[in-house]
Length: 272
Image (cartoon, rainbow, N blue to C red):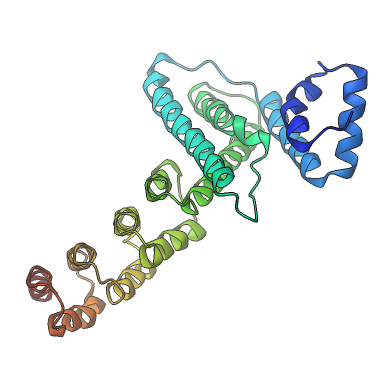
C-alpha cells in the first residue's frame, strides 16, 4: 500500500496505541524510515504522551472550574485559528506550503492537561523531592507550545488572527525577550493599524523596563497614524520618559501632523 503523509499523519495516534493491524504497522514503519517529516511528528507525539504519562494529573478543586473554562475557550480559539490558517494556505495554493503536523491537533489539550497538573500539584501537598523539578519541566513544556502558537499566528495573513496572537501574550507567564522583540517588530512594521495598536497595548505592560521604553520612543518617530502617535505620547508621558521630548517636538514642528496630535504633544511636553 502506497501511503501518503496525510494518511500516516491520521494514523499515528492509533499506531502508538497499538490499535493497528501488523500489516498497517509495517506500512507505517516503512514510510517513516524514508520520511523525515512523519518521523518528526511521531517523535513529537511520543514526547507529549510521555509527559502526560509521567505526570498523572491531580484532582482539581471546584475553585479551578472557572479558570479551566477560560483556558479551554482560549485554546479552542487558537485551534480554530490554526485550522483557518491551514485552509487559507490551501486555497491560495502557495508555492511553499507550511505543514502543520498532527500533533498540533492535540497541543491545545496537552496545554490544558499540563496546566491542570501544575495547578493540581501546587494545591495538593507533596512529599516527594522531585515535584519541583516536575512542575518546572511541565511549565516549560506549556510555555514553549504557547510561544510557538503565538509566533505562527503573528505570521497569519488575516489581521484579526494577528490581533489574536498579540492578545495571546497575556496567556504566557513571564514572556522572554524574543516575544517582546516580536511585539515591538509588529508595532513598527505591521501593515494594519489595528494590529499595531494591539501590539502597543500589549507592550505597555512591560514599559517598566527602560529598554522597552527606549523602543517606544524610537517607535514614536516611525508612526504616522494619528491614533498611534496619540497613544504613544500618552504612554510615554505617563511614564515621565524624558527621552520622548525630542520625537514629540518633531511632531509639533511637522506641518502634516493633525491638530489633535499636536494638542496631545503639547500636553505631553508640559508633563515632561
